[in-house]
Amino acid sequence: MDQRELLAEQFEEKRGHLQGVAYRMLGSLSEAEDAVQEAWIRLNRSEAADIDNLGGWLTTVVARVCLDLLRSRKSKAEDPLDEQAPHTLADHKPATDPEHEAVLADSVGLALLVVLDTLTPAERLAFVLHDMFDLSFDEIATVVGRSPIAARQLASRARRRVRGEDISRHADLQRQRQVVDAFLAAARGGDFAALLEVLDPDVVLRSDPSLTLGLPPLLQGATAVAERSIKGGARAARPVLVDGSVGVVVAPRGRLLMVLRFTLRNGKIAEIESIADPERVRQLDLAVLN
Image (tube, rainbow, N blue to C red; front, side, top):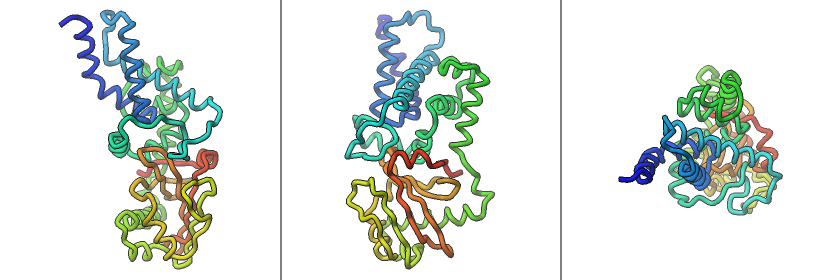
């Protein structure tokens, strides 16, 4: 086996790890694969024999490529959104394997991917590399171009935003979570009677006018809202904290379609508001439920 074949074999051994880093950074399977491929190209252009820690070197390269992509997303002017996925927070190319991407997104956590997308590029990188892949802040500092102390602060700030409140200490949030979980379970299972149990008889569903799903701007009454909920995308819905209360993100393959905000009255859902406009979504404080 020559040196080039040996290098390719070593790279393939690390591909899964590198793709995991890139996917959590970018939230897009196709972009993650591109980032990993770019690392392979850079490796071939380097003096590989001089690299002491190939895994660490490759992780750093992938992280830098991802950071550049994230910064490019943030600095770009808003482009017209894809009609097939009209309300993502960032433009993504279609995945090379949608089914694989759906499985990958679910394994990472749909809600987590959505919340990660609300962080700054540097915060996201610091959180992913440290909290998910256990890289030191010294290593992270070299990627983001800041001191280790600043890298630690980035991760800490991101952690607070990602994790939100511990609902085990908040009785009201626990009750909200129970109601929202019951609503999602009934919608996923097509259980019309169970939906009526959690909906106020006069419940109102307000749809974001920017949605292109043919929804009326307002539905009223438990029967109408239950019928709509069964037809909706509950399988891609996950509970999150929305501005400090329990809500839902609908994120097929980890790509945000809408946020649902709930108003409860007497233990039942009295209002559901869908928020899909990207600018409005960016103004929400989203956090993963603990």
